[in-house]
Length: 216
Length: 85
Image 1 (spheres, one colour):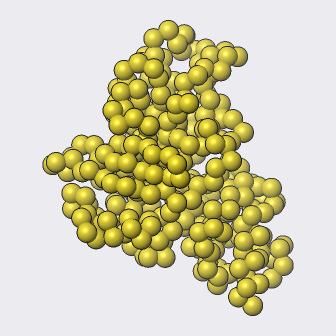
Image 2 (cartoon, helix red, strand yellow):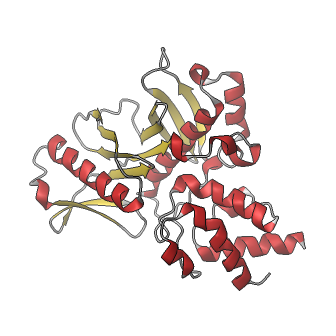
Image 3 (tube, chains in turn purple, orange):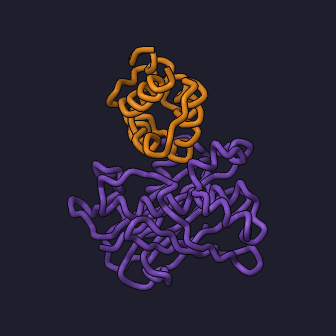
């Protein structure tokens, strides 16, 4: 079954100083991932950005798998980043592969001074994944939650042919916390992932035709 | 420290990471950190680090992945405190 998972980290909303403490990052990175940074930091990336990049990858992988394995618990150090390819100039998509038990997933990430965002999928091409990121004016939970749903539905309505009227679409979370897309009373088979942190929101979804990335 | 006392201290650990102070004041063992208190997952490691400092314990990976609701947090903290004693 196809799925999708995405995550966003607002770098202004995390404790950068604390991120440097081994007591903190050792709960996110494996020893091998720590060594990966020491050996070859991707595109001269700051260590705190490396930690949060890997966090966003691991959270995205967890969200991807949670949809099909409802009992899964998030354990960052059990998700292993096999490799990360940095964009040549340091600007653009970071690409890589993550492993969790028998699962191998690919990821794409962007890193800006204000945020890091990642989307995970089971195919290296990401042609069937839609992905959107934007900033919002308020960072309280209710606004984040409402804004990310509106943002996702507006783009789903535009990007998926025949999905129906915008006003008939809505998103509700199931018992496991996974967002489910509905058209009226009908549950649509379009796996969807939502994320929000600080002043940033993002969504990703899987659909069976060529997708696009959208950053607005 | 009994479970009720651990719970009262846990409220102080969770306070910086939830906007919903009213719900925090009334939490019980069934309260879920993400779904009920709306704590962002990016703060889960902060909570574990703060709990380690608050209760003078060390929380390993196997224990930290259980800490998704108040009951499991108290279970882990009580267990680690009993080992320490």
